[in-house]
Length: 552
Image 1: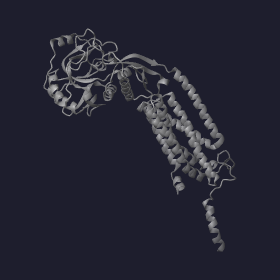
Image 2: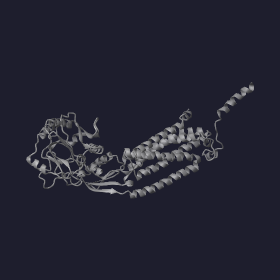
Image 3: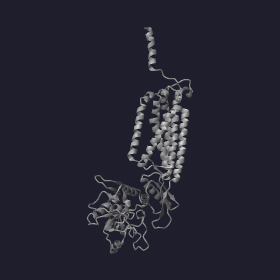
Image 4: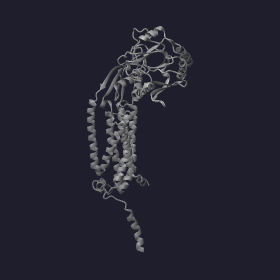
């Protein structure tokens, strides 16, 4: 019954369906106009950034736990960029080193350098500034106050800890008005000047450079803001998400507040909606830079807010990622930025490809000598597996940021041996069945029924190893584990939907089905005197009807 069912699976149709899927993958690759996989840092080069940590006071020892927490947050931010083979490691007791391929230097520095200190402040005055920001201001971390600053560097007010006290205290903050000194200092303030960002003190701030670039075409022109004390802190934001709202065209970042944050936000927007411009605005400030200053026309009671401000997909996604993964527990400065050369890696790649090619030739040579004509199935399966793996690597590079590195290449080379193991298990089972006297076509089906369990178990062990290694490892080892898992899945698909149907079709030909010389199924090569075949059906009919005719 099992053999009959297997024969009814129509190997030709299975092969056609397999090639249709392969053609769809190839079509997607062609449509994306990306024809090569992304390369890892060791093959394509990339950017390495060294961040030096300091306490918020600027002195003292760095806590190892805080440094590791910062490394984890930076790792999550970099992973959200959709890049592979990123390496984020601690160095010494106060540095974090970030090495990432395929990402522009400025974008990477901006992403890992932000401390993500988010706050909401009331707007009291706005002016247009024409002074260019200081060099590198767009990606620098907030600097401590200068020694000549007359503004306090620490808060002078204690924030209530209970919800009722917070709601009452908010009304006091909303009633704050700037002094004459604040107004005078604000007039002389230029974008790029460093002042302390203290939550219960006014703040002078400008639009973030990437938004100013979109608004004015140059960071030399900007909007500066005189902001009141903080009315809502960023840790009351529960989640952030980037997207384009329905029936709109611009990217926004949507914020969902906690219960307390929603109540504070509702009270704040209720007050702001009654004020005149610009005091009906609140500024969303990230790391001392204004990213949006929306006007409030009505109360927002549900705790859902949108950050607008000339975003595109990249800047909106980056901001949502930074806000979702939280603020860094330490202050950092970018102490070094290097471009990594790929020359050494490419030399190793050449050597690795040569070694892989030699191994592939040895596998094919062994199959030709031992399995003879069946080597056609081996060569075809390896070639199609290579094409499928390449297409998947290209697509995964574009969709999830998979990058091909030397360890990942090693995982792909290991797959050659795994695929060869599947061939050996299948072919030897078929040969065993043929030695027991079954016809070659029957031996293929019964041998497959027995071999596939062994193949699945072997591949399951490899896949489980790859999954565990991917979960527990970091850096380049993840690339090896990911590629090992990917090629294991390709091997399963190949043996089930290509190799086996192909062999089933081959044994229907006289060359393989009748065990001709060099087919790999010839009796002397199998070690039997002759290949027993079932008698043709018409011979069987003749044998049963002959006695009746004789009696007549």
